[in-house]
Image: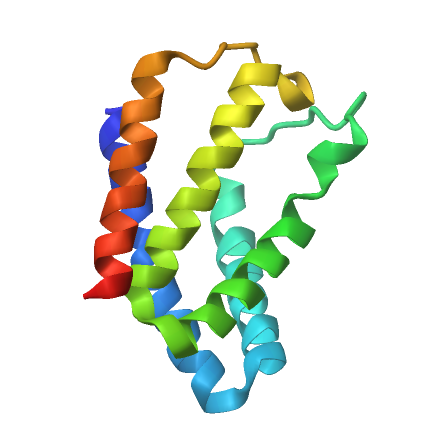
Length: 139
């Protein structure tokens, strides 16, 4: 089930890049980012009462509170990229960045994550991702 959710999240990411890029082209990048985050806040505000209370805000590390800033930066960069690269290449290059950073995070155990050393087999998967991106970029 979690793998299916991850795939669905990836599909939603592609749709998000398309919708956010279209909005950015219509109203500008900064105004689009405001609307994007306000609409997300509205949905969260509407859904949170139904998701149960989770009062666990004590003892948080500073980096756990940077998600909103990172989300904002991600939306801005994807919107800028979308205008010149389109959806598929923007998402593919984003996937490359996610893959490389994820492999480094796992290998070194950054940000409190479990340390999962890089394995040779993962190199093959990374090369396949790079090959796919090169095909998208060159075709």
